Length: 284
Image (cartoon, rainbow, N blue to C red):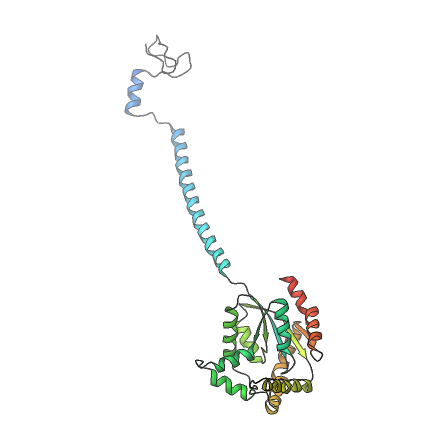
């Protein structure tokens, strides 16, 4: 007989295949055959085949998951790298309507950045290294509107150099060409939330301009080249012909906040607060 591999009991009958412990006891012939060539087990092979396929599928899934994770990470990085849009309020009104005075109070109270298209252009024409200086000087002297490409380049440069995202753009857009240039080039990086329109009479505007010029000279400064009666008339004419249609466009869009700028600056500022900027501050 032979010994059971499980319990060690010696089997009397050589051909017996099952021990009392219910384990299979292979004969010598079977042991030899198993050593030479294992008995095929279709179910086991099938299970092994499924296991191999499962492992392959798992590897493929892991590979696809890694690829998808990389794609998602790249897409999300694009969104994260995308800068926040600049929030913009256009400030329009005739020359001498009080745009600069009002903007200075808004900057002081709400922390917005004041970008005056006129100031940017005047600074550019005084820059000795500017290639546009003489051209800008000629346009301003004649009371004409400077080409939009120059103005937009200066505005965008100032925005990108700032640490904030809230801007008062004073004196722009002043014409249909200005508005088209803005909408063609600036809508991807800006959100125009309103157009603040300062209303007053031509007489008030002319008086303010001349008074400002006299005060500048009295303080030892130099009057602006366009602060004279002839230039004022040209500026007012340009304002009515080219800028008022822009204000009408924004009125149709429901984006105009109109304020009477004839009263004292404190009254005008209070109106701007209640009608627009307190609400914008609450949204920040």
